[in-house]
Length: 279
Ligand code: GLN
Image 1 (tube, rainbow, N blue to C red):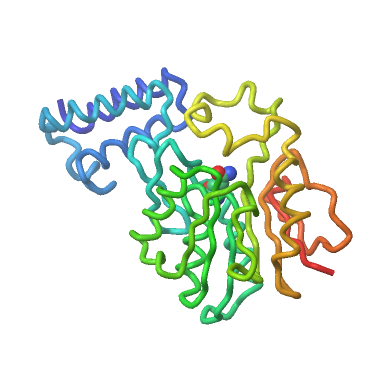
Image 2 (image 1 turned 120 degrees about the vertical axis):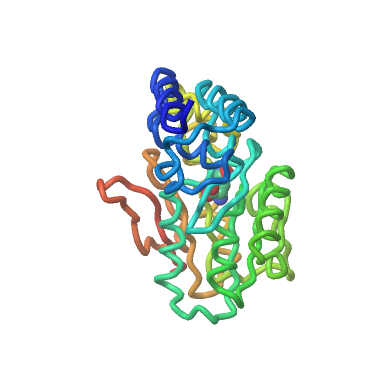
């Protein structure tokens, strides 16, 4: 069979399995096993595919047809134009989380500043490592309650060359921070588990493959956001910022020391996050 026919069959199979983007997923998986560019899929469309590559490709298509997320199959997902290694121990970085990076870049325009940043619940490390990479003189503390997630984050920091300016701490939320050693921070960021228990029912099967404790607080979505707005101010500089991602659960009520600096909304007008500052 030719590349073109194999792709067509694979895309049909993924469509029947209910995948959202069957053709794209089939192309990305073939690029992955064939080590080919997107262009090659078209310029070599009428070539036969070597049978060992075809076998491997079919195994990956079967996994995707069982609705395993594409990023876990390829082991990689791009965030802010850099490749991050991902495993089922970490949440797959989402494009909407890039607004957190934009929020930092717009408030800290000096790329050579010696800033201190902190990322609570770092997962793959996508937020923390992107900041360390965009600010070559910044130091970044990344925390996560999961030791296996932190291993993935550390590995990403090594691969992306930011590890020397980062510390990784394994504990719940801000309990991972050490007085006298960490902070005060110019910004504390977090994309906490904010999906409500009710929303977890009836989500696409792909989400079942992700660590549940990284998605939901099994409650109203506000548990971790509330902890952050209450505990993070003590770790900020006078002018420091707290930046959080959120979803339909909305935003937590604020302690008197904080004011809302910006409500982040996506193009559809949905609430996506918030930026706070100390009064
Ligand atoms: N900080 C990581 C991300 O934004 C992980 C977040 C999480 O596990 N809730 O993708």
